[in-house]
Image (cartoon, rainbow, N blue to C red; front, side):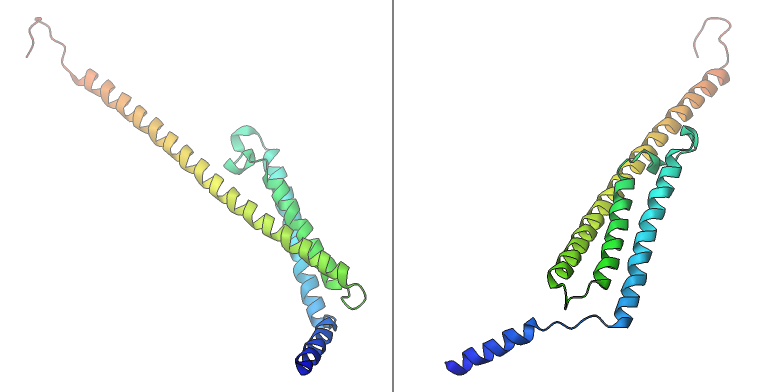
Amino acid sequence: MMERLLVFAAEAEAARQVTPLSPNVKALGSILGFLVAAVGVWLALAHHAETEKPAGEQSLAARLRWRIPIAILLAVSGLLVEIGVWTDPTTAPISFVVVWLAAMALLTITIVAAGLDWWWVKSLATRERQALIREDRARLFDELSRRRNAAAPPNSNGQSH
């Protein structure tokens, strides 16, 4: 019984020892965090530029107001990854864990929001496509009925055929 407690105590002590991130991991994490933040900023600016266009030139996505907050969430999660990479777990373990948990939570929220955005855009596009089909069908039937009426010979003697 005593041996089990000593083994458990040794394992618990080993678990408390934290190895700092290697320079290669820090460099790679820093590059990836910066790229994620840059993509988030670029997406926010691109969406803002799309909303500034005249109404006739705007794409379907310009009507979606939540795209900028999603892009900002992505940029902030990239910055948190950048901060998390450079936070030393040996000197500030609580800060390290909090920053990484916040980064993962924001990234999860961003992915869920982006999935909902994709679903909503798909639904809007389907509705618009169906509206265009209805308009084309109505225009085609109007054109056919107009041609039928123009092609029917006028009845000059009042008798029907």
